[in-house]
Length: 191
Image 1 (tube, helix red, strand yellow):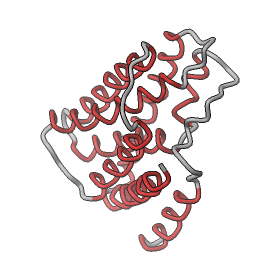
Image 2 (cartoon, rainbow, N blue to C red):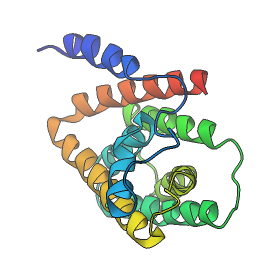
Image 3 (cartoon, rainbow, N blue to C red):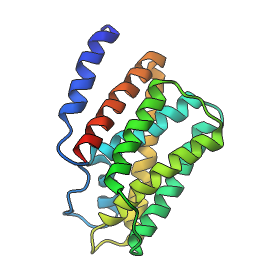
Image 4 (cartoon, rainbow, N blue to C red):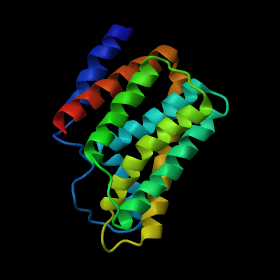
């Protein structure tokens, strides 16, 4: 399978999955607590792609960034969730989510290597928006601790999937970045 063939399938498939605004924000959960937190990152294309992208970009950076960027994302996501849970607001959350997908995809596609603290700051800044959105979506009946635990485990798994995806090689990772960025652009237009 050639790179051109892969591109012809990946980009349209990723764009076809987009439905209106960022799709993780449906407003309802059938299951409260741990299971809901564990499922939430997988239910929205914006969350799913951003979290995989953090893993892909961290793997491109290599070295200390391989663990530092995902850890920074997880910590800031927790702060964003706490902010939402305590009634705090962030401006333009949906736009921030979509922008995270676009920017992270572009960074992967362009193979941008930045100093580890800068990469951590980029990951953390986007994670605030993701955490805030997750916090707003926490079911009312859920235990905040159980929901957060499920959310953190799912996010770490998605980061690990991105890191593992880097094993497919540099060109596949770069083209994945292109597909992620294209999806982010569609999300921004739809937001």
